[in-house]
Each structure stands twice: as C-alpha cells, then as structure tokens.
Length: 284
Image 1 (spheres, rainbow, N blue to C red):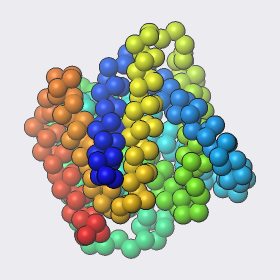
Image 2: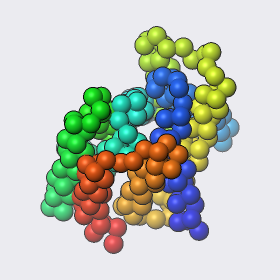
Image 3: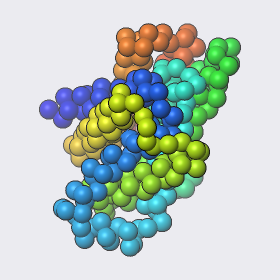
C-alpha cells in the first residue's frame, strides 16, 4: 500500500513542471503562490494540533529553521525560473542531482564519511549534468541559463534537506513543515514585490494553476514522501524519487509536445546511473 501511495505522489509531484509551463505568470509569482497556499493550509493545522511544539520550534530552533525556509525559497525561485529558459526534461534531470549535493554537504558540514561508491557516483552524476548543459549550449540561447538555475535549485533543496534531516530527529513533521513553509512563503512574497511583480490581477486560469500547484505537487506529492519515509528506508525513497524526472519528461512530451534532446536524454540517463550507483548499496 505504501508503494502505491508513494508512486501516486511521485506522479502528482512530477506534474509541477507542466503546471508551471502552462502558467503565464512570472516565476517569482508562481513560487510565492505555491508556498503561500501551502503555508495557509499547514500553519492552522500546526497551531491547532501542535501549538506547544510550534512555539518551542520558534523559540529554540529559530536560526536553523529560518535557514531551512530561506533555502527552500531559494530552491523554488531558481528551479521555477529555470523552466522559463530550458526544457522540462533538462530542468527535471538537473534538479534531481540534489541527493549528490546532500551527500557532499553531509561530508563537508556534518563530517559524514564520503564512501568510494558515493564519490564515484557523484562524479558520474555531475558528468551527466555537464553533458546536458554542453548540449544546451548549441540549442536555445537561454537554455544554459536554465540549466544553471536548475542546478542552483538542486543546491538550495539540498541545504534545506540537510537542515531538515537534523531537526526532524526531534521535531514533529507538521510544526516543522508549517514553519518552514511559512518562512519560505514570506520570503517569496518579498522577492516578488522587490522585483516589481504584482500578486493580483492575474487570469482565472493562472489562479487555478496556482491552486493546483500547491494542492497537488506541494501538499499531496510532498506529503506522500513524508508518509513513506516512516515506512521505508530513506535511501530507497531517494531511489524511487528518481522516477520523477522520467515522469515529468513523459508528461511534457504528451502535454507540451516537448521532445527531450539527445544530450538531455543521454545526460539524464548518466545522472540517474550515478545516483543509483552511489545509493544502491544503502538501499539493500
């Protein structure tokens, strides 16, 4: 049952790139609405069911939670912006490199041992990312910028996950997510305003896409990942999440008629191979 729920969550989450591509609003506005709606749903639940834990989180873990929220905001700002410049497939495969950056960050900041399989897998995955970017140099003029933004999105998510991995050892899921989402939402609204973007006056279609993005990929997709995390190994979960860029690419082909380039297809395969090689032994 857990795998059915997880696979459903992966498919729902993979629709995020498609919904973003269909939306005509500025990327900063899309990111802001996604997190504002998600925070509006989660914070009342945290206050109602975890009031004491939420207050304690603000009091005792203010700086790491703030950093986690800011990094999540950086992830969405970069990744959603990348979709304005490059294909869904390129963006999805490059942002999927976050397990590699999590491993590198754990080695640098948490003094975790960097095993040989992990080191080799990292080199292979980064080679795949380079292959996609090199192929995009000869494609659309802004495709390389989109690739860089997608990688920045992966780095932002990696920092968010590293902090969350430490805090979630002793903090309940709901107050943590509600707090982090709220910080990210406030940050993204500030970024939208600072860049001269308006959060009002959008089309009905865009508002519907904002709601779908928050309700589906954010709340249903990410919630299913956290649901599964209590029942299966984190390394197994990471491997299964590698289905997401494949699903996103398939949806883009069917809905947007975006055909992945040869470089994206080959580079994406190399990235997935590197990550699987790095994490497969842990999942066993």
